[in-house]
Structures are given as C-alpha cells and as structure tokens.
Image (cartoon, rainbow over all chains, first blue to last red; front, side, top):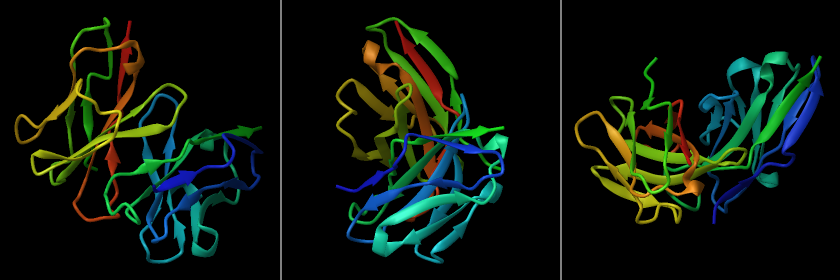
Length: 115
Length: 114
C-alpha cells in the first residue's frame, strides 16, 4: 500500500538556522507529493506540491522541497527559520500505485523554533 | 480566495447521540472528502465522494458513518451513535477532478464525545 514516512516527530532549530523536515514515500510509480502546515488550532494549509513537473518545488513562506526518485524522498527545507514557522508539518501522497485522488498523510513533524 | 467552510467549529455531544457535521465545499470542485485527526495523531482519510456517491472509504468509515450531499452546496458527515473514540477534529475537503490537484481543507470541526 502507498505510504509516507516522516522521520522525526519533533524537530527543533534555532531562529535563522536551516530547516530540514524529512519525508520518504513508498510507491513503484512516482506519485504526487504534498507538504501541508498546520498551525495550532487551525486547519491544513498547502505549502507546496510535486506533480511530475520540476523536481525542485518552491512553496509559500520560503519553503521548498526536492523530489528525488532514486531516494524516494521529498524533504522540505527552508534556509532560515523564523519564529512564525513553528507548527506541525505533514507530508502527503496521492496517485502513484493507488491511482486515487485521496491523500495519505504522514504522522507529522512538529517544528519548534528557538530564539 | 475560495475556501471550504465547516460548521460547527466545535461540538460536544453525549455518547450514543447522533451528530451531523456540515461543510460547504469550493463551488466548482467535484470531489469531496472527510478526514479526521485524533488529538496528537496524524490526519486519517475517512471517505471520498464524487458524482453523488462514495468513491472510496477507509476501514474507519464503518456503518455508523454516512455522507450526503443534500443540495447543490452542502456536504455532510453523519455519525449515528457516537462513541468516546470518535472524539477528533473532522476536516472536510474538496478538490477538482484531476489527479494531483490540490485538496483544499476546511478549518475543521472539533467533536468531543462525553
């Protein structure tokens, strides 16, 4: 079955430091991949998505992610963390083996930004 | 920007009671979904709905759950007899029909079963 794995349920970085949130997918057919952010007591907001165009995808708030087929990865990065980036981040997959539109979410990574 | 709206934002109900969560998807979208998130856990797929019928459902979506599109704008999730373990945030979402299209989520309805 199609799935995503997010390594690290909690990540802490200092303000201004690089943010790296890891996501690996399982699918023999390249799927569509997404990163969503959830601020406390709020819904899910799309950061960026990969849909088989450019492998380096730029999103909102300075985030980007690179699709690496050889590593089955779609890690999320941001060069310089800001206090406002503190939130939970979810990687999601759709399409691929399943051929469906629904998303399968990872378990999430809570990002803490230290002053 | 168009958005998915959900009501109520928070509902407290007694175990065994019926609950209906309501959603207004984005107007030109054709695919509708319900997801749930138990506190501190991941977002889980419940059901997708297209062309007035369920297109896919998870094993969570058992006989106590049902969905309906009663008119041209609303999309509802009914839980017939709530259990304590149904306490969660329920997200409605919608998307256009093509694979890879973004799914837009509402702000969620927080259900507490006591």
